[in-house]
Image 1: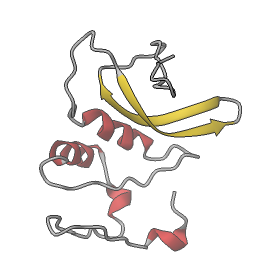
Image 2: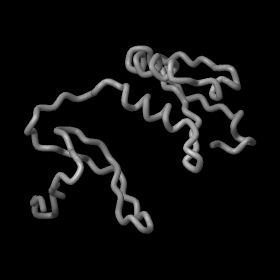
Image 3: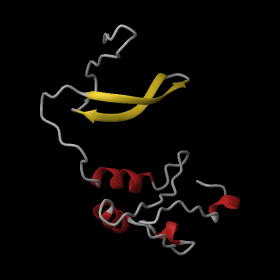
Image 4: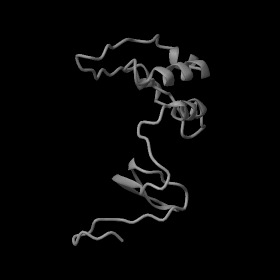
Amino acid sequence: MCPPKHSGAKSEVADEDTEVSRLPEDSASRFNQDDVVVSATNFTSERICPIFQISNVTGQNMDLLKSFLNLLSVRNSYKEGDMAEFQIDDTYSVPGVGTVISGTCTRGLIKTNDPLLMGPDSLGHFK
């Protein structure tokens, strides 16, 4: 959770096509499953993005965030058998886990334990 001294802080990032509206200060504590469904349903058409106050320590509101992510529509279609392509944005070294990568799957579908090739290297090969 955000430390109390920062929880009231606001940030505005908007362009001319985005309408900025404010929620009541205590609305985050009242965000429920119905709000998640409405937010996910209107996410692409209404140009809104909900803010989830979650705790990685206690897990508070993680269920709402997971529900929201699972309700979002698929942005890219894929065909079974398409070769997957994943663009790596960043790498992290997590003690006790090893190297963790993050990025975007731009094509295909990646499942647990799927073998993937890395590349291209300086010679244009994938390994």
